[in-house]
Amino acid sequence: MNNFGVQEYPTIYQKRPKKNRKLKIIISIGAILLISLGILGLCLYLFLPIGSYCDKNEFKANGTNRIIDGDDAEPHSYPFIVSLHYKSNLYGNTHICGGSILNDRWVLTAGHCIESFYDVGNEKYSIIVGLDKLNEYSSSQVYIVEKVFTDFDFDNILKDDWALLKLKTRIKFDDKVQPIELSQTPSENFIDKCLVTAGWGSISKTFDPEVPNKLQETFLRVINDDSKCKINNEWEKDSTFCTKSPTRRPYTMTCSGDSGGPLFSFNKTDQKWYLEGITSYVVMKLQNSKRQCLPNYPGFFTKIYTYKRDILKTISDNS
Image (tube, rainbow, N blue to C red; front, side, top):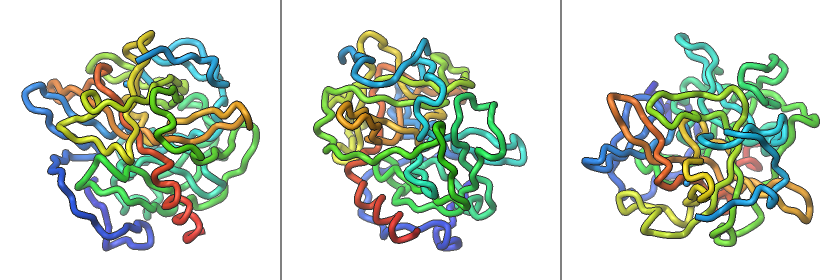
């Protein structure tokens, strides 16, 4: 699946003119994008797509125990989260990424999650709403992706990692399916603060992936430390959150399958969730073609506040 269709499918994929690019990258087959880190054999892994204690009492979230070393989320506690599925001839409908509902026609995910724009035209991408367990849903929860709008460039994978999915039909809202508000807080206000993330990505600490059936949640602390956040001397600080696992759970982090999912805050004043980031990439180790998420390295999330104007304009211009 290496058909990006930038010129061939302009009604499906719209993109701004390219900017100057500084980072040279190696792109592997499929939706896995890697940056070599030399003899350590580490890599940045996008397809999915972290210190101090994060107190769960800061949030309305509830949970029991295991994202890696996270918690089982309470059923339907995050009604804005969706599962992005891809339909292949070999595996059928498969979860590939997360996403967040913005309104009844638009979902926000990571740009790297949509690898083939040709397949968007062929209705191979869909979202599933109102999910708690990946294997328990009905046809009424499935919505086909009609178009994709993104600034993401596979020639510079560390920035602009967001994509808007326009759905073919309108989402029907109920108590289990609701949109989330976009960030209203400048990103720098979250430094050394805790945010929540959730997804159905791998929960394995080994080289063998283990995909959970139940939605996982965890808490991550935003850090602003070049010595920890720069990978190969690169970190798009203006557009990307750098996050770290809280010390009480040194291994909690996002992993493969979590990409595109939300990083979010809870406002106690208005009792609302706000979307602050999109799961983008983590550091992984390669061994015999297998990949292991490394918790001693930070995890990175696209900043919503940075791109909020572009997101809203895209929706307005194409609704």
